[in-house]
Image (cartoon, rainbow, N blue to C red; front, side, top):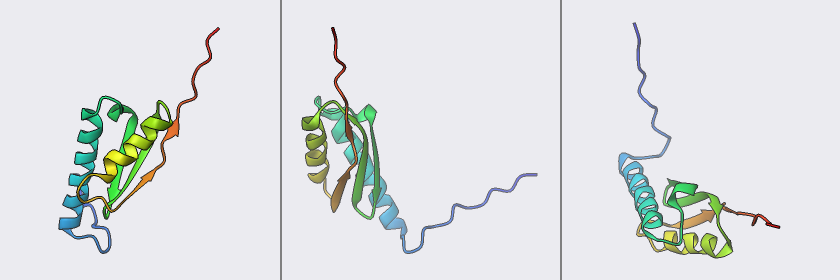
Length: 93
């Protein structure tokens, strides 16, 4: 016999906030996916109370900056924490 416990709600988080954060995350992922200069597949997105955190590997500093700009433009985003790392170019001989 197996019992499944409900996932406990985070203190102070309402259902509306949870849906809003999920919606913001979905919009961010969609924006990154639709823009040809960003890689949604290499970017992890999480949202908590309107603060979006992005992590992953950017091809260059311009892509990292573009991700921040695209995320900032989305409705419901209060701030962006961009923890992306810029890929080191591989030297070829």
